[in-house]
Image (cartoon, rainbow, N blue to C red; front, side):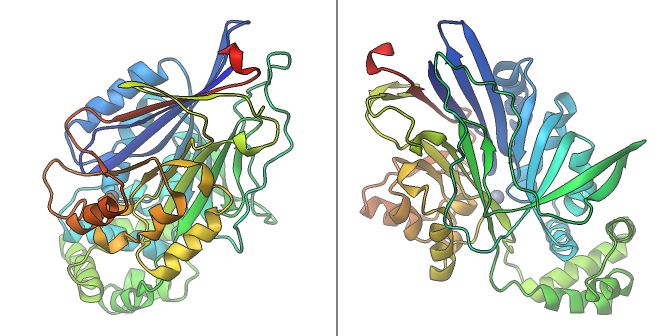
Length: 426
Ligand SMILES: [Zn+2]
């Protein structure tokens, strides 16, 4: 019996499109069960469309898309979801909770930079995803963290094949009633919320540990004050912090449809944040098999297979850690991040550097704490700051050669296999 973790970083230039398939193969019964997920789907490159097409045709085939994780709503991380979800409905979507102000800032920023974007996806993401997925879960920064409990579910074995079920377990925040949204004709969708300190579990097999990275000082209230002056119809209600989502979206849309008001919105952004691109809230993902649990036999060999060769090694480093565009440069931020993930760090094999290797998001503690086998960034073929030369040289000084996933069409593909049972079973 084999567990196979097949993951791919697609070649989309300055963007992020990660997909993975978790497979349970039972050779005796000639059965295979698959779980597919995607972490971000965006890129500036024209080839993104082709990458999405290939993913649908070659990886997903006739299977459902089980889960989507969204780091944040910048275009380079979400621009491919429209195409992807047009072809395949998703079962679960996990995205960070963003306040209306945070969403408006993202829109203002993209207007200022002259980037086209999907209005509903940016300003009202839960509604946009609700039309294309069965469940939408907003993830908020929780209290504490630092321990991800491993559940008691029985492990798979040849004698006891587990019911894959593909039903994720997670703890929703208890509320008197779920928020609901009328997203498509006649359908009311509940919007669920969870804390990032609770795990998302594929029972018996897999753990998705989420982390909401929040910038510490983001001057949101300054931005709202500017808005209240320049665009009072939306700025004044935002001051009160009690905003109806539908109303907010209607007002935002009316601003975006008016050239003069759009200009004012971009001006508010420029006045508060200047030329610099603000990295807002970002959802990080640690994807890990439940190999830490006691039930994996000590002599079970873990075979790590790469496309260009075969490596056998006895290791428990198979987890994948993605950081989106998180701001992790400050000592405090990296410390909080490391504390949150401490129970999983020993098992991290691959790390994606935040924000395409920008120096403004980088702290050496990220690789120091995880000691990964692979570190990569997604970036255009030629850029002088993604990744930053200083980041490359800092990593080199500790013996890490940074992998770049550019728009050359090659991408970065990894296959991990865990053989259950006796070592000779492979
Ligand atoms: Zn980005």
